[in-house]
Length: 307
Ligand SMILES: [Zn+2]
Image (cartoon, rainbow, N blue to C red; front, side, top):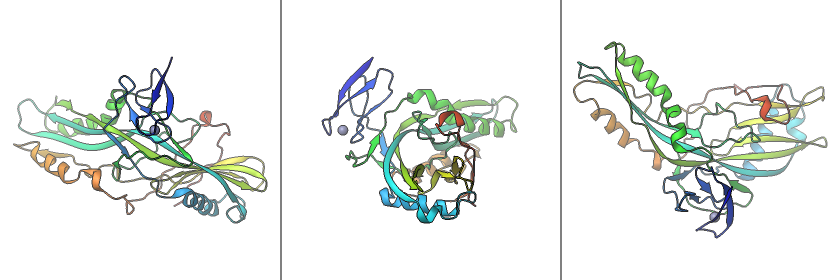
């Protein structure tokens, strides 16, 4: 059963499925709770840093570096259309504690974690894609020229334990060096949603159309379709993903004796992420993402990474 909603910001009517967790106006991005139509306050965004032209250039540049593609690919390819996809992420404040029965010692870990909040099989965003954990801003509705905001398909509670999974394991491991049966408490909570931009770029090479996907906040090319040198099939060339130092607090695993929480709390308030400019000087490293062949109309056969 579909539910019809009216955007309080731009007035557009749009419908959402009954099971949609958070409805999002596709035109201006305003997020609403479907149950009562109230606006979601905990709404953030990573701005598109590239624009259409910048995304096209990124694809072109990446094409020049592909080893198994024709040498002239980057030179004679012509960029055609582009579309900006704002996909939703759930943002979690992960906070996990472990303590021992007869000890004052406690282990605490805190970090922000983002998880893709809907499925986008057609976009081919790799499942293991690492989104940045700083640099988002307060969301402001804005009508997109050529782009779309997407609904949140998965409820906040559903992905919470996945967000804190690694922290729980790390904390338990640390505590197990102090006592045999540490008590692990997971105080992770949902902090909101973040809309994250990807440019989908179409380009023409010798009369055929190919596709590329660019991380519009980080600038990296997620993948490019390209013809092989033999010209038999189009392949999905895959470039590096973005790997941003994963923990906001830099892996804040520590043992705090006596006052277990004070140190970590101080660190957290000092590094609240809202005011950060986009992390341009972040750490980069190569990570190869495999695209699930079942989710693409063209089966990916080639994978290539840049250094
Ligand atoms: Zn709207």
